[in-house]
Image 1 (tube, rainbow, N blue to C red):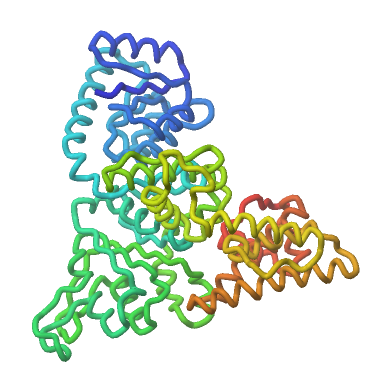
Image 2: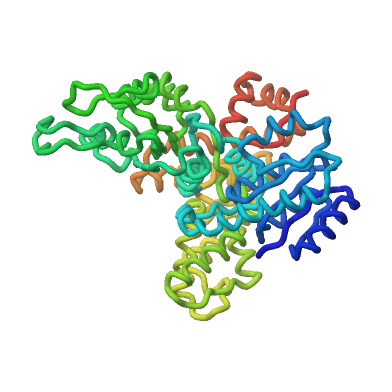
Length: 509
């Protein structure tokens, strides 16, 4: 059995509980603050967590949210003073297993912890049934915010809109929101609206009656009916055809829908979670997405960070995916050298977590030895690094770069702006430097268009706006009003852009 974790800044309380639990042959592990316990949760799990509510630094509430986000079945007992009792009961209802009010009777505390242990062991018996949702990994502050949000939403049925680049794990988060919700025992139904032809999507969503159209030989239940009492995840919602957006809005508004060819209204008791990698606000402005539907979906918004924003998680994710891939193939897991891990952590990885997972699968199959060095990685990655260095050097010298454009560099207008930032800014040198970044931008646009990528203007525009605003904030030491004046835009505009683009470091004067 795993140890009981005790988290309290009061050494005497830790000592009393340790001794009392030792007499019951229960192992313990103690922490003087919540932050150390949060860090330890990344690598191990207690049988039961006992925590004070008020401590220097992170509070017991923050620890509860972090623990529940990672381990929803973990019993958490909160220690609270009588003055905190009302707020503690209200805040932890449905989250904490129980609370202990100070001063507490030691024997009653041990009895409560024993009950929590029994609950934890029962939960462990069902672990195999609930482990179908893949684990969301991340130690970066941006991911901790996501975990906290999942914890806060654990007892809610509210509609959630998940945004983020492709490959950041939007469906994983949707599954976690379902798994930790009151609907967890009911179906989770996922539908990628961009993967279904327009003519079939309506039937997929709402079902059809027999004879509704050619080939409809039997009545078919749609995804809304399949997800009854559960959760319906609509991925790539930004690609939904405009006329179907109207039908979806009706379901979200009054909870009723009709099958295709049907005349009898059906009631939908379904929680909707939507996701997109697109800028829905821009699509609304362009007339491609209904504004009223956007506001219906955008009740709670979760933005998933790109892997570039959480580089410190790349080693953790790499080890996880290498172990996962090795287990699937029945082989020993490969190990990355320190230099190879540093190299991976420096890559842009435009495909984000999905690209890293695929890379780890490649390494498991193709890398020659158990210890993987930089030169064992795919040639397109190692060649890219050399090309990027050459382009950066050429910009510093203010001479045209070689024509080869590496994917990580060409995929980031923001990165190009950093290269040009330190280039000479006078006369011919200034003109040449500008030609360099414009040439890189044109080449990236050509590459995206030739690959058939959609929404090229939106994708490059977001990167360009982000680069401009970050550079302006750097020059104004984070003062967004000054930055807005320097950029020639309004205060409300820069505030909205900072929120939309997830830019940190801005402050009001």
